[in-house]
Image (cartoon, rainbow, N blue to C red; front, side, top):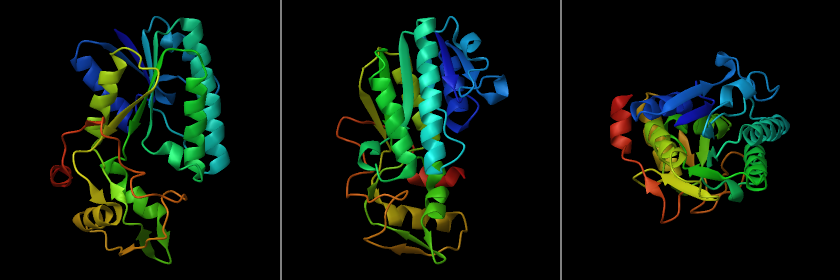
Length: 247
């Protein structure tokens, strides 16, 4: 089948395009680099013409609250309108596990807007909630700096490799719309502070990670299980040890 991947030149999108191609599908990357702009609609109609599935794995170029909300609102509205005009049978979007519990975060406010638009669109859809990527661990540390130290709460954390995220999204994309959420997670649970401490040390990053019960996550309060998936989640195969060894 023809699958158009919005954000198809990025970390997850490029892996998804490759995996779909390996399984015999016509996977088309759609991004600024390929002449597709979901904010202005430039190239969008042409890109999705004849497609059976549209998968949105794009992300906001800014994490500032107003910019994130505007990006997801405008981009998703344009994509859903384009999908309706093109008769797309399955609209898939990659989101983040725990989104609905992180509403005080500017970034997650944007993801909540995105998910709401999809659910209310009337289009056949699937939203994929993936736990955070190993590849984003350093960024978590960057966002959690306070007075020169990384301060993180000891909540449960179940990260997964970008390869496993792409594989999971691909399986959802070529399946039937669930008109709901499919969860993906990593194969192991850690404490957030513990995992970031281990990852930074493995990369030779000298920053000190402080365990802080009052610290948040991406600017929002976080509970013990906010960042881990439910019992029905499909788990990836890449362990932390294997991922670190690959770096």
